[in-house]
Image 1 (cartoon, rainbow, N blue to C red):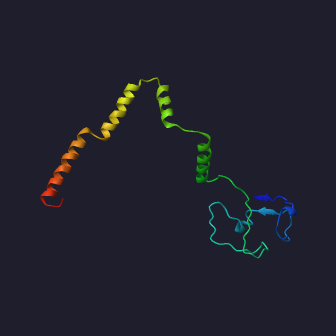
Image 2: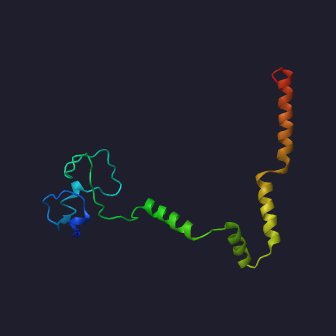
Image 3: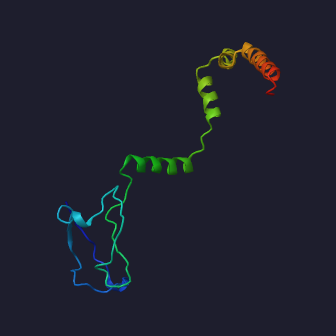
Length: 143
C-alpha cells in the first residue's frame, strides 16, 4: 500500500528544510516501524529529526476516521443525540395506539406488574417482623 504525500508550499511552513524531497512515497510495509497504527499507545518520544533542538516530537496524521467499534459508537452517540430528540413515553403511546388496542387492559397489566413486584402482604409481614425483632432487642436491653 502506497500513499502519496501532497506537496506543500514551504512558505506556509515554519520548519528547517531537511534534505527530504518534496514528494516522497510512503510505503506502509516498509515504514511500519515509524507508523503508529490504531490502538497504539505512546509511552515516550524524543526529538531526532525536527531540527528545532527544543525536544519537540513531530508527527503527521495519515488517516483519521471511525474504524473501530468504539469509535463508531462514539460517532453514533455524538451525531444521533445532536440531531434527534427521543421521547420514549410518547413513542411508546404511539406504538400502542398503532395497534388500535384499548388502554384499559394495558393499565391493568401495568398495575399487575407492580403488585407482582411488591405483594400487598409483604408490607404487613415486614412490619410484624420488625416489631418482633425490636421487642426481642428491648428484652435484652440492646435497643
